[in-house]
Amino acid sequence: MPYAFIAALLMALVTYLPRVLPIAAFRKEIKSTYIKSFLQYVPYAVLGALTFPDIINSTNNYSTAMFGTAVALILAYMEKSLFVVALGAILTVYVTGLFL
Amino acid sequence: MNRGQSKMNDFVYGFRKGIPILLGYIPVAFTFGLMAVSGGLPPLMAVFISLSNLTSAGQFAGTNLIIQSAGYLEIALTTFVINIRYMLMSLSLSQKIDPKITLCQRLIFGFGITDETFSVASMEKGRLSYFYMLGLIAGPIFGWSFGTALGAFTSSALPESLSNAMGIALFAMFIAIIVPPAKKSKPVLMIVLISVAINLALKYIPIFSFISSGFGIIISTILGAGIGAAIWPVKEENTILKEE
Image 1 (cartoon, chains in turn brown, purple):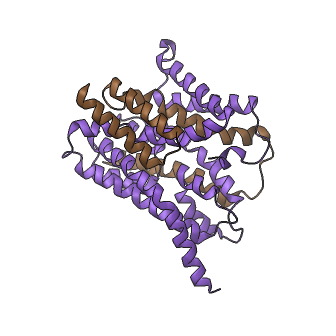
Image 2: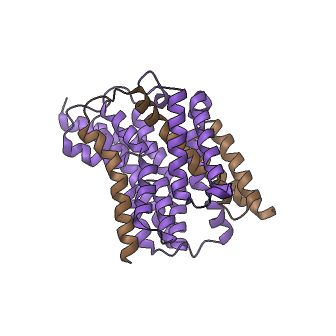
Image 3: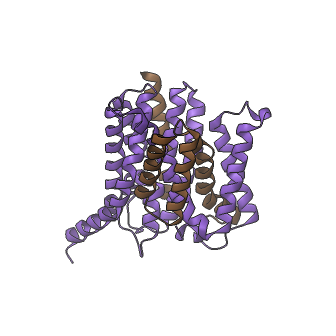
């Protein structure tokens, strides 16, 4: 399966480089407020776009996904750990799936 | 103090800080293993991807594109843009680590920078040692690979209702990462909403249907963070991230 292997290596490379280039090579501080702000906001923008609307299609059933999303939002708002939020959402989808 | 002793202490301290991340990764990585294998990849390929990529969003998106037989350029670009956020984290950590950490050591522990390890590391007081960073990333690396292997090798044994339910795990983890800062910072909340709105528009407005979902994420991210940075420039260093 050379296609998948090459693609996985490419993915590993473009994941590793952004992680190490700044910490290995960049010793100075970025001066531009705009670029600094942009970089600080990127995680939230990307995770938001990755989550919505795809979360609604993540379980093969819109209704259970809605319940799971609601529970995840509530648990996250209460600042629960990753494990609790992920497990709470999975269980909600599973349990509501038994009825819907 | 004995130097070897303090290295060990730093490692153990870091490792303990990584345990909640390890636990959180298992259900999400399990889902990744399931998704990759049900999409037709061999289980070992799924584990290889988790070991070599050690990232959630990027490898989910990239692996989905592999399953759809997308081109190398789209796979690499999509994964790269999703991972641009690591540059900020890496940059931010470069100010926080012990300056004596060598280039080689930076190249090693840098591999383990994720949304979650970064959040934990950036909340520590004082300079971060190399052995602290190694300890911190060790558990999450194990949890991510182990969870993937569990999911990849049990995918056929799992009832469909449960594997469908696990599809939400990754997104729930993202929600767990973005909601607490969005609760405290209006700009963060607005940027998430702008980015989501653009993503929805690209997805559902027919004239944009030529844009693939990978490029849609790229455009939403750049516009969301770009508009946000113009309207709400951050004056002080890392104020948002400290709140995480």
